[in-house]
Length: 113
Length: 115
Image 1 (cartoon, rainbow over the protein chains, first blue to last red):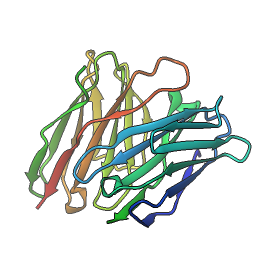
Image 2: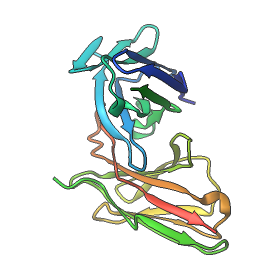
Image 3: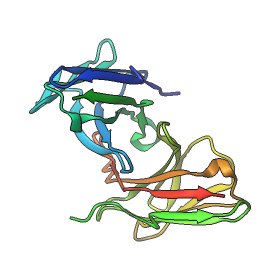
Image 4: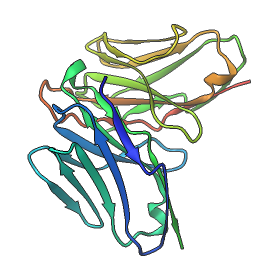
């Protein structure tokens, strides 16, 4: 079945450094790739998304890149701040099952002050 | 515009009991999905409902069930509760327009503790 792999599972960076989280997906028909941030005790919140017709999208300190040929997409956070500490989930929307969204296993990001 | 609303937010149940969790999706959203998240774990997909029909189902035992009403509100039920059912249960809604690009929006979750 469809699968999304996410790496690393844990990432620790110094405040001000960049953080990169990578995902690969198996369903070549996927066209939509959202990223979510989950803070402690809360539900995941959408932070950025990208569609297959673009290779990169940026929103202030966060950016997402997509390589459809390789079926890879990545989240880049620049100038990290302690409030970026959270769990991040990538996801890919397939065409089957009524556009079912498959989530990666999550990356726990620690930003050290 | 109101977000996804889940009730109750916190509850404690005893082993063997059953529990019902409720979810009100964002207005206009016809798809409701449920996820289980245990501490430090990812999002385990339970099931998805669309227009009152279960469209997708995860790998959970039959003790976990759900339903969706005509107004898109959804409930999930867990019968014969086990200690391992203690988790955050997340509801998510999506418009599902029939074309790609359906953003999923999550509620804040219902924290279930089984003692």
